Image (cartoon, rainbow, N blue to C red):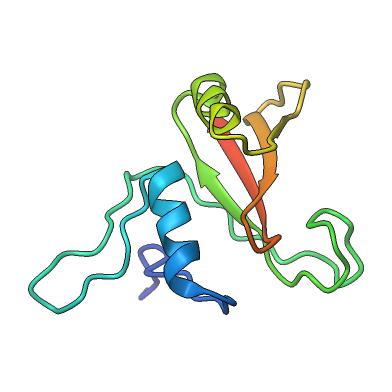
Length: 120
């Protein structure tokens, strides 16, 4: 059976794409879109990816008009939280450890929700 092998990209609207792209690069190490086809795009490490449609009236993402949430897999949640806080970014670790790992929440400069996930 033919199937997809992973997510090939995440595309979303931004008020200022260059500034927002630089913020993601600076704080998460996500490389910007290459300028031409001779450059390679950001390559993520293999690992679990959750694909989960939510009910339209969920509060999980925050604002009711928010249609998506980015979940980033991390190795060391505590160290990344420290780094983000040192950069004056408001990040809220979930105090509970779940069977699938630990989580923290923050928003990018345009208010888009981000969930950090350290798999167990």
